[in-house]
Picture 1 (cartoon, rainbow, N blue to C red):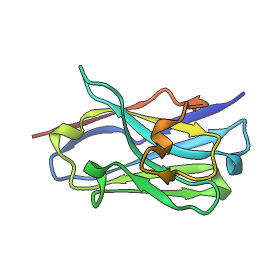
Picture 2 (cartoon, one colour):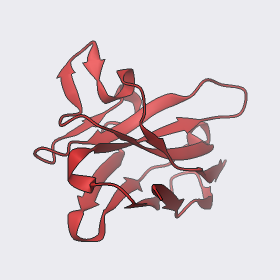
Picture 3 (cartoon, helix red, strand yellow):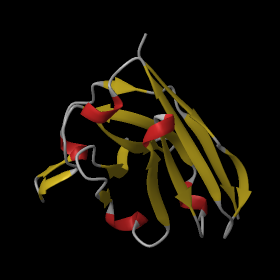
Picture 4 (tube, rainbow, N blue to C red):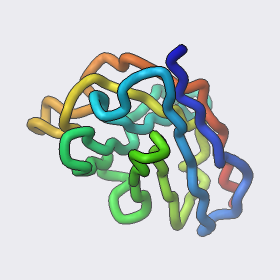
Length: 130
């Protein structure tokens, strides 16, 4: 059974930090790039970050650059999202996603966020209070 299980969400004050985890099982971790999306209340889902299966290169949405860091532990089939300097507008459900591509970025119009997701996690809620 394919599973992506997120953890690490919670309530944090503005300026604080959280680390999300995404534990993958049931598929070949090496064949998929793994990333994060988020969806705030009343808003559309947006891409956050991705880490490439081929070389570990990373990709971030512009608003996350410099504050968020994605990493992976291939031995544990786990991807992490370190979120620093959190803002109230970061409040959202964060979803882990797997796409069967080797790189997160091919061109500005061909990124991880543009592909159909093969597997989704159920999400973890991050709430940032002001």
